[in-house]
Each structure stands twice: as structure tokens, then as C-alpha cells.
Amino acid sequence: MTSVQGRDGLPNILVVEDDPRMQKVLNRLFRDEGYGVMVASDGQAGLDAFRVSAPVAVVLDLVLPKMSGRDVCKRLKEISREIPVIILSAITEVVDKVLLLELGADDYVTKPFSPRELLARVQAAVRRNRKQAPASALGRENRPLADLPSLKALMRTRDERTIADGPLSSGRSVETICSLWRREKDAF
Image (cartoon, rainbow, N blue to C red; front, side, top):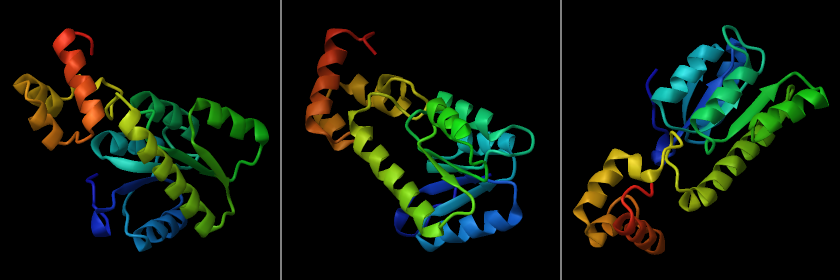
């Protein structure tokens, strides 16, 4: 599967759902809002799609072929704690909801659902994630920022202006990273 950018540069939503009718509904819902949408029909395909794309959120059914939604959620959160996972399921038991939230799901919406409510919950999760992202010292795969190739190249220059003009343009965090890097190169 390949990543498809939405209108106005909005990022992708990954939908992991095995019901073709629900796939169409969710695809249309998010595309109408300008998102690119990737659809996976089973748990393993969803996990594979997540690894090769950069979704801003995942909408995940629980009852899936090849791998349960519970296992997919757990694995997604092992790969990246930051990407919001919104469970969309007909399972209404409180015990199941609590278990999924404890496993790392960011929200739980039961079927039947209001498309407007689901959209609002996904957008709220994405906003929360964006607010928390600058404070995070971890990259997409939960690796320290210094392990990311582009930042390593920038740090090798030891030129704070280069870093400030690059992908990290937060003055205070750039100064902190540079300071830590100079003091102890292995701190990361």
C-alpha cells in the first residue's frame, strides 16, 4: 500500500476495517474532509500499512481476519505511542472498552455511530497529538531523535543555525538538543 496525501497537504488516516461497506463510508468521510485514506481489510495488512506509511491517526475495528484488532492496537502502540488509535467496533462491553484504552487506544466509538462524532473524535486526537509532539523527544518508531538520519546529519554540522533552519525550528528545544549533544554525544 502506498501513502496518498489529502487535499491541502493534510495527512493520511489509516482505516483497518474488513467490512467493504464500512470501508466506503469511512473512506468518503475522511476524504470529504481532505484527508488521504489508506484502507486495510485485515489486521496484518493494517499493521503492514502502518509501517510503510505515516498516518496521523488509525481507525481500527476489533473483529478482523488474520489478527485481532486488540493485537493490532497493542503492536501499533509498540511501534509508535504517539499516533492516535481510535477503536470503531460493535463490541459494547465496558470491560472491552477499558481493556483497549489500557492497551493504548486513544478513543473508542461503538457501532452504529455518528460519522460527525467519529470525525470530531479523530480530529481531536490528531490535535492533541500535534500539541504533544514538540515536547516529545521520540521519533515515529519511538527512537530518540538523535537516531533519526536527518537529525544526525544536522547534528554532525555542529551549526545551530543549520538545525534551527531545518525540520526542527523550535529555538529552545534546538538549543537543548545541541547542548546535550555537545556535552555527551551518547546521551541520546
